[in-house]
Length: 338
Image 1: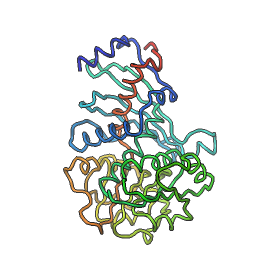
Image 2: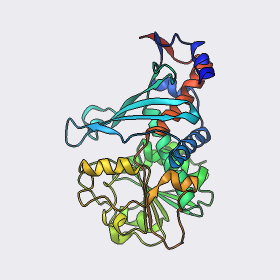
Image 3: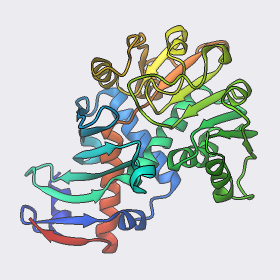
Image 4: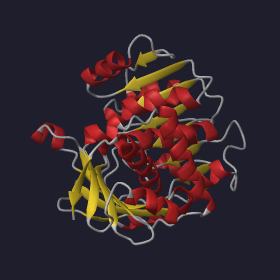
């Protein structure tokens, strides 16, 4: 820790200055997809082994359909300490032509506690979220040949891009969105040179029935939308929602052989906040425990597994700390007085 602090002192007067990074500057640090996967896996392993401190995210809700979350974490093995402040306003794109999700990440010096960096967290969130999904998919369904993605926005595009890194036997990726233009944009953005064919889905039902692994990145609301019905999902599939209890029929996780979550504490908190009107399904274990080998994942080809990953701050601070390290090395960003 002392050596790390000394490196920071070469760039900053700790306690008097912070390093500030805009969203474009965060991207300019040039973390690659393999970098993000490696860092995210390290964070998940730390969580699975208990080598970190991360309380459940707390929130405020100015309107029924929105939330703000404060997400602190400390991962000693990565010298990563900080807190993300993030919001989700589902109506922003249509109402204000603004992103659904924005926020900031604050990183702190471990020895003194002083803030050392403030950065936009939108890109970090957009990268670590699909990384968690595909790492879990590889652990739970490594031989999958088909991957279905519901939602073709920033997160959906990221999931498609990341899936090919960990699911080595993929033969096709099916995508579906109620907005046809979003599907077209995703396919055009990734281009004809993408290593796996991207198939434009015809309906929720068709994609759900045709794919071994399914993921969803839509909106998070208290009343389940059940876009994918219980009858369309069968044994042997793996479901990886990023939108809590919103997208898939709540009957699916209740009958699943395993209901795995990234953070049991956070899911319990959100259940108390009303996001599981029919009750939180019985939690089998946590995602990091499967990756760390402390709890079994898939034990049979016939198991139906649901793995709900709603986002953990251990991933944010670990990825964010590496962004800061590279930004300081390359002179990206600027000092601001405290």
